[in-house]
Structures are given as structure tokens and as C-alpha cells.
Length: 303
Ligand SMILES: Cc1cc2nc3c(=O)[nH]c(=O)nc-3n(C[C@H](O)[C@H](O)[C@H](O)COP(=O)(O)O)c2cc1C
Image 1 (tube, rainbow, N blue to C red):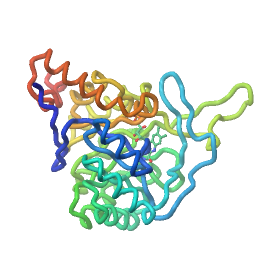
Image 2 (image 1 turned 90 degrees about the vertical axis):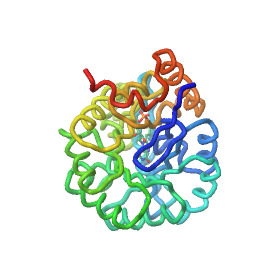
Image 3 (image 1 turned 120 degrees about the vertical axis):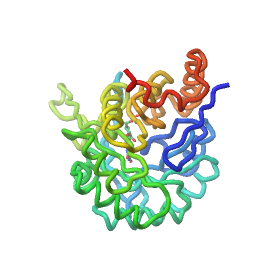
Image 4 (image 1 turned 30 degrees about the vertical axis):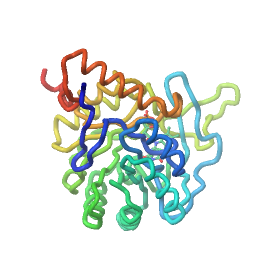
């Protein structure tokens, strides 16, 4: 028997998979369903202070290599989310509250609410690539990442996980800033700023024109980011981007991630992806003589 249990700082997980923010994460019922499908933890859709409609349609395009989305942080607002959160908790795995705001004050208010709702940790969306004045427009600056992390850490006692953007020259500087702000772990990566044009209409396909690329196409970018962060900054990492199989997840674990999140892989393959990924990790570890998933975390750095 292989032990799939892992931990991200203080947060203990029965296996290293989590639902990524923004996919099936807006209602308690869906979060519960994902938990029951075998995810080790679930992350909510990013929630702000007020209800927000997001960008007009089309907001998501499916390609053979992934998704391009500009949902625009559509969400019901923190007050209306209380009830959904209580339903999500019935799934009996840690529920991580993802939040976004315009600055440290909003992040603090939201994090305090998430803690009050019973969140096991809070994920700071400092990386959405397609929302004006939010996400990566704030989080691309290391000093903002450090300040917001520090303010949130000073206001809650649950673990704080800033989620970082890959759309910068140096993601390591962002992870370093998060660490200086007292983060318990970093999440890498959010989607990669991208666009698609329809030659027939001579127009960008997304109504917002620019969106974020996710899925298979970005996996090598995510793996590289995790590898670089692990090498330079001493902080637990949650890897995300393009995972839909056990072998994909193992790349992230070996690059240094203590756990992984799955987003587009759930959108395309449904919540069954969590048990498949876990089964494939287990089989690989068993075949290669490992007793615990922890044995392979960071393994790619030993050469
Ligand atoms: C439709 C869609 C909505 C998303 N919404 C959010 C969000 O609200 N907050 C967030 O931090 N990331 C959001 N993401 C980004 C994912 O959480 C994840 O970081 C990214 O998609 C890469 O992982 P993947 O390749 O497994 O999808 C969204 C992604 C997609 C495809």
C-alpha cells in the first residue's frame, strides 16, 4: 500500500489533489460533489466583496490543447456565499476560500469572512489575467504581494496561500515576496494571458478580447515555475496548470509541489479525474518502490 497523504504547511490532505479555483467552485453542491469524487481538498471560485457579473459572453473557448477564458471574476459576493460554503463543508475535505480584492483592506475583510465561514485556508487571487484593477494587475508587483500577504496573515489564523501569476519576468520574485509576507504556501500558476482571433469575422473570439490560457498547453510553463520557485525559495508549493493524469501530477510533485490543483482537467473530463489521477500516482509509486507520495516531492532536483 502506498501512502498518498501529504501536507501543505499545516494543512493535512488525504491525497495530493485539489480542485482549482473557478471550476465547479461557485455552488456548495458542486464543491461537495467534487469532494465526494476523491479530491483531497476543494478551492472555491474567487469571491469578492460585492456580487459581480463578470465579462459578457463568450467567456470560455475550448481548444484541443486547453481552454481560453475571460470569465472576469463573476461571483455572488461574500455575503451570499456564506450558505454555499456551509453546504460545501459537508464534503468532508478541507474547503479553501479563494478571494480577490482591489487592495489589502478588501483582502483582509474577505479573508476574515472566509475564516468565519469555516475555511481551512484562504487563497489570495493575485493573478487573474483578465480583470481590470484586480488579480495580476496588483499581483505582478512583488511589493503588493508581500504587503497583501502580510496584512491578511496578521488578520486570520488559518493558512494563507497567495496564488501567483506566470505573466511576469520573474515568478520567483513573487514567491519570495509571498514568503517575506509570511505566506504558508504559494499556488503556481494561474492562467497565461492569451487571445484567439476568428479569421472569418476578423475579430477576437472572446468578448473581452484577452483571456487566460489553461490546460495541457500550459503544463510545461507551470512545471518550470514550480521548479524555479522550489530551487530559490523555501516555501511549500501547490502546483497547478494542465494536469489531467497521474503522470502530469507527478511532474509537478517532482518539481517540488507538495500538492496539485486541477482545473481544466475537471472542466473537460469531469470530477472523475481526481480518483483517476490518484490511482495513477499510486500505481507509479508502487511500481517504482515508493511507500509514500512524500518521497517524490522535489525528486527532480537531485540530479
Ligand atoms: C473557466 C475558468 C475559470 C477560472 N476562474 C478562476 C478564479 O476564479 N480564480 C482563480 O484564482 N483562478 C481561476 N482560474 C484559473 C485556474 O484556477 C487555474 O489556475 C488555471 O486554469 C490553470 O490550471 P488548469 O490548467 O488545471 O486549468 C480559472 C480557470 C478557468 C479555466
